[in-house]
Amino acid sequence: MGCVRGSIRIATAGDIHCGTQPDDRARVERAFAGLEPDVDAILLAGDLTTCGDPAEAQVLADICERLPVPVFAVLGNHDWHANRTHDVVATLVRGGIQVLERSSSTVDVRGTSVGIVGLKGFVGGFPDWTLPDFGEPLLRQLYAETTLDVEALDRELAAVADCDVRIVLMHYSPTPTTLEGEPRAIWAFLGSDRYARPIGAHRPDLVLHGHAHAGSFEGFIGAVPVYNVAVHVTRKDWWVVDLGEEREPAVERVVAEKPAG
Image 1 (cartoon, rainbow, N blue to C red):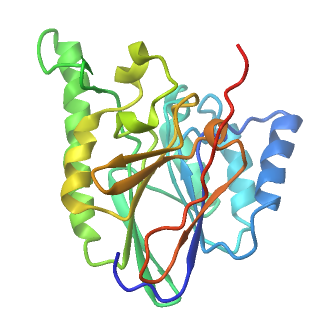
Image 2: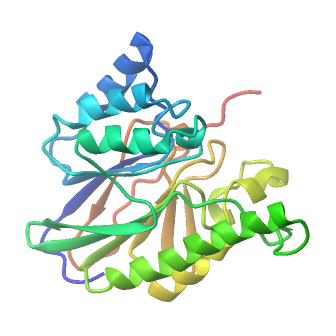
């Protein structure tokens, strides 16, 4: 971590699944109303909508356009379900949300530069549960899609290398260490450890992801902390990370009780 001038507080959440029913809207409105007043930015780790309907994205856009702090987001698999991502992104952008996909952005927080690299991520698997670059063209197409992600992650981490604080925001997981609790048979569809190479090489200050609702909160890629901030894991509307001067991120330990059955 570079020179951090004072404390920087980042509110994070994944898998908020906005819907258009009154109860869904009220739930999301309550969550944002409960934000701590001193947060400096909001990072949303994908699955912003329930089924990828632009009307669902409008719920989030209506709420975020009133916020006094910047909001950054990546899409998740639910946001792609209706195959209307162009409309979803356009709706979110109109609400002031910066949607990152294989891209990066920087924000100045009281003289400290924060670089955020964002991408949805994709499938691929982990040791003993890996999709190969071999065989049928459709299977190799999956592998190639993740390759584009890995290359973009490497490129965008290099682009923010001079920032005082560097954060990677994803939906899919880059490490199996935050997947414990999920059935191992589906790990290949929850992320890929191919993302670990650029993360390990550039060593950002932290990595945030969602997607694995039954996974674990805290993991690592080498010395880089990785947090699964899906609300199903944190059991709260927001997990707030405090990036303080000359120290590692201050984290609140989350012990998520798994639902019975």
